[in-house]
Length: 379
Ligand code: PMP
Image (cartoon, rainbow, N blue to C red):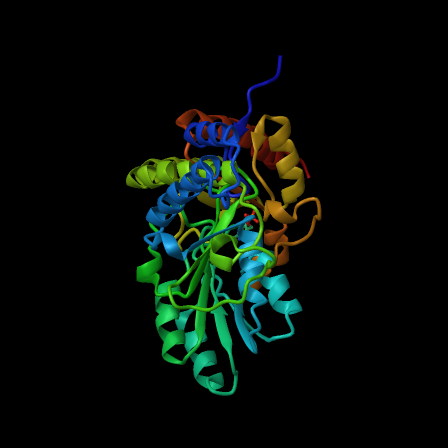
């Protein structure tokens, strides 16, 4: 019999929500191509437009501002390669922002993060002031919440400053959407990326929200889909699942206190079991679901394997880059000492997390941290 598993890696990907699964399976039965004019085509089109409304509602955007993509990696690549002369990018962005920005040929100005895991608005303002006029077509990109620490970034304030200097603004809101209220209109940004699988929808689908009136050359051409903004026959089933997940995630936003309470108990008890443990960015305004926890003198990879053997799924740094074991560029950019950064694991809760999950984690943590403490006493 398989041992029970405890999944605490929602920032890597969230389990599929039942409503998303139902919508996805039902949509697989729809034969039409959404571009066809016959009844079958119109049925597929209807599912896509319903999903567009559900996703728009989750982030307070207009349905026409939602462009479905294959995920946030595509959305981020699209924005970063749109022919900018200069890109102001924070050092704690996801690789799917950093890599295309660096490869785009634009002048890349990196914005440093502080030890609290946030980028200060003043840093952006100083760069924008210094370079306004000299930068040509420029964009600032700042994530809404960090995938490793959960630290919330001052996106609305940054957007106000950047736009006052004539810069465009993009935010990667992948980790914030569905976990914290994200209001596209109120943030005042030109574009926002989000991903279905982080909110309990299927993988391989996401969206770029593009403010009405903002012109972005299409990233993928060769078809009139998505109002000529993203060519290619739509993945109707994935989009329908994404829409259903968005609707369910929006309901869950009313009870994020439940997740905060679970996360806070996990952190408090983990530190009381192992007083040497450090919660990175623990004093910063954060997402309710994320903990970046370091157990000094334990390598994060070893910790992740030991927890895995005890039935607990967490990750060391960003899961998207795992397989490649190395130090997190996010923690490095925050100036965290290399020894501590190498010891940091990420625990992330979500829509189906329970007190029993926290209990299971703490039991395993107690055994692992306890044996580490015993070894230190013997040494
Ligand atoms: N941005 C952030 C902050 C992420 O955490 C991720 C996923 N790890 C992405 C972008 C990429 O999203 P997707 O998996 O939809 O390509």
